[in-house]
Length: 336
Image (tube, rainbow, N blue to C red; front, side):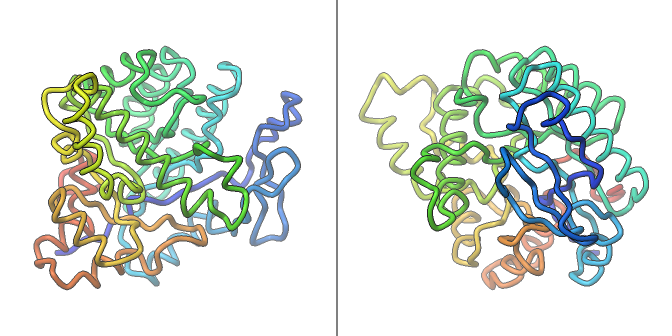
């Protein structure tokens, strides 16, 4: 029986705390209601993103899931709330608040939702304390992290212990772009979303590969959002650079070898790109995701996979649900 799991969805509590007022710092995102069915996420007095009640209402989400033939959603925080820039005590409170909310939402609807947590990665000791709580106490199935930590790429030595423990505890990691590179040049045309995010994602993935993180921790389970961003297309260039510059050869194998170890969500907007992902990495590494409930999301979730006619029935079934469950260490036979 085919199960459709939307791996890439975001959620925020309707009663989101006003940390901007509490801590006297307008870098904190706040949720400003615009009506009973919507709100603006505000940062420093400006609209960061307009959202509808789909982003906080489990009931609304379930109605949409039934309408769009989705069996299960994987819930993760909105990246603007990562707050890696904040003092660690405040950031840890923010992470715990969101993780508690996601765990409560899953507990209320255990057959509909699976939860991913967030952790304050500006301090690895605090981050691991929250990973431990998320996975071993709250029952969340993995962690969502940003593509950089205050400008440090993901191969920074300060993060080594984080990845080591995630491998030891078998905690899946979902890497999502945030605080994109080149933000000062991406202010027009919504380029932050269409160019900045794919580029930032590729930088994060390439850093994990070239910095030896994937080689050092071969048991790590990492899913790269938005189909890996621009990474799949530039992999031959990364390989070429690795071959011609000996000082880049910090790993035994070229970058394309390690790129096959990532999982990738299916938010690539075109069946040709799905076919490309499958040819490069294999159907077992591609996970259906939609970016629900944002404007750029795929509607209905899984449409691009359904429209990729070259897929076999087994490949389609795996990509639409089974791969997500396998990534999250959930038995396919007894998914939730």
